[in-house]
Length: 427
Image (tube, rainbow, N blue to C red; front, side, top):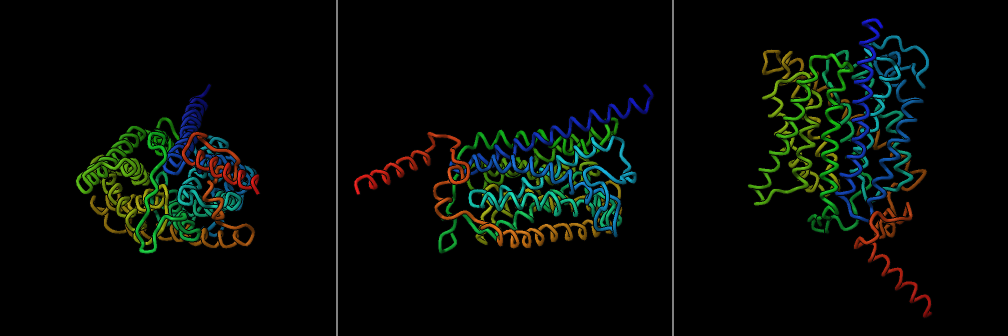
C-alpha cells in the first residue's frame, strides 16, 4: 500500500465517522424538539425528522449535490454531478467523491431540521413534506454553491468554515419566514399581545437531545477539515467546546440574576447558540475569542427570543434565536477575530465587509425563497393544520398514534371521545 493510498484510507475513515456523528444530530433534533413541544405533537416531530433524512438524502443525491458542487455556471449554480454523474474533476478534495457526498448530505439534512422546529405543532404535514423537497433540492444547494461550491461569494473571499452562515443563518431566516407565514399556535398570544407560555413537555428529553447535538457538533466542525491528518482538528475541537460552554454559562447567569432562577430551556438553547456561533470561525479564531463569541451568542439568543415575542412570532423551540441570531454573529465575528484578516488582528475591514455582504445575501435568499415556496405550496395543500387537528394534536391527526398514551392530553382526548360516543348513543 502506497503512502497516498494509506492517506486516502485514513481520511475516508475520518470523514465517514464524522458524517455519522452529524447524522446522529438528527436524533438530537428529534429529542430536543419533542421535549420542547406538547406530548400530543411529539410523534409528528419525529416523523418530520425522518422525512428530513429520507427525502433530503434522495433529493440531494439526485439534484441538490449537482447544483451545489457541480461545475460552476456564472458563479450562481452548479451544472454537473447530478446523481454523482458527469464532470466533477474540478473538486479539490482529499477523499473520494462518494465519501464527500456522504458528508455533505449530512449537512443538508441538518438545514431542513432547523425549519422543522419553528413551525412545530401547527404545520400541515403534507405541506412540510413539499417544503422539505424544496429546501434540500434547491434552496440550500444553490446557496451552498455560492460559498462552498466556487460561486460568487467564495470568490469574494468570505470565510464560513462549517456553516454559521450557509447552514444556520440561512436555515434560521427560512424558519422565520415559515413561522410568520403560518402564524402562531392557537392561544399562543392573547389579544393584548401577552404570550401564553406553553411549557415544554419533557425537559430531560430535550436536554438529552441537546447533548446529542453537542456531541455531533464535533463532527460538524472538526469533520469539515475532510482530513484526519489536519493539524487544526484539536484546535477546532477545543474552541467548539469553549464556545458552547460560554453560551450556556452566559444564559445561566443571565436568567439567574434577571429572573432569580436559572431557566433550563434558555440554558439549553444558550449552549446550542454557542455552538452555532463558533461554527464559521472554529478554524480561524483563538480560544479567548471563542469564549467571547460563545457568550455573546447566548445573550443574543435571549435578545432574539424577546424580539420574536414582542412581535407575536411563534417559534416553539427557538430556531430563529439559536440559529439565525447566533449564526449572524458568528459569521461577523470571523471578520473581527480571525487570526488572518480580522479587524482586531490587524487585518483591516475588508474581511468584515465581505462577511457582511455574503451574510446578507444568504439570509435574504433563505427568507425570500421560503416565502415564495410556501406561497406556491399553499396553492396545492393548506400550509396550516385545521383548528380541530391542532386541538386534538398532530400525532393523532396525521399519524393515528400518541407518543405517550398516559399523557394528560391523551387521557383528555379519550374522555372527550367517550362523551361524544355516549351522547351519540343516547340520541
